[in-house]
Image (cartoon, rainbow over all chains, first blue to last red; front, side, top):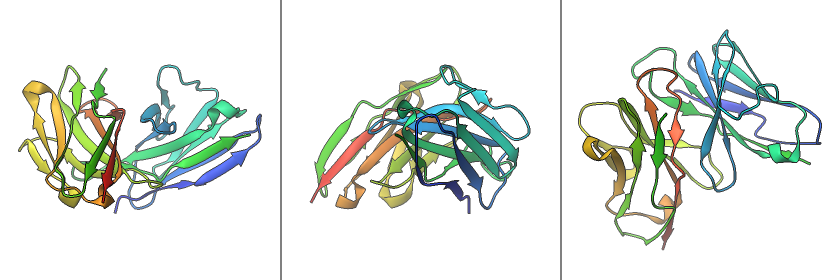
Length: 119
Length: 114
């Protein structure tokens, strides 16, 4: 159990276009999902916290108008990179926290990531 | 805000050698502690976690970690590494309250030579 999927796994887009990345919890409900960004050979940096039914909480320095997050249901959060530029090229990883169950408050389950390349 | 330091950026070991990767955290409250592994081309997998109780926790694949509260440390150990342990290892913490977002260390690249 506790599987998180991301779609697409990789995407190449042209500069100026928008890209939507989906994060789904397949076998559990997740009130909270997190979006991270990982540059090559570096650690994961938290971008924002996605809350079901309410606005996302963005970390300092992350442009909320550029990285639109929607958490429309207990199993789906989407990250839309608007007007993408080459510097947005990165590995985007989501994680989901169980809504209920033992240890539900603490543990996160990670998706496989989405590699975005902006040309 | 919490922070996590991993002092070893790149570790090279021979098979059967013992491993210890350091992790120190900084936070004013109580935390949960995690070690994740990322094999080449794969996604993050949880190795082990500490929420409370016995400070010595055992994880998958023969890994263990010890939480030493007085030192704010959560070092990862394995008595005998294998070539298949070659991967990136991340220490992470989150607070027991609030959003519980994870803060990751910078990662340690482990290279095990056959």
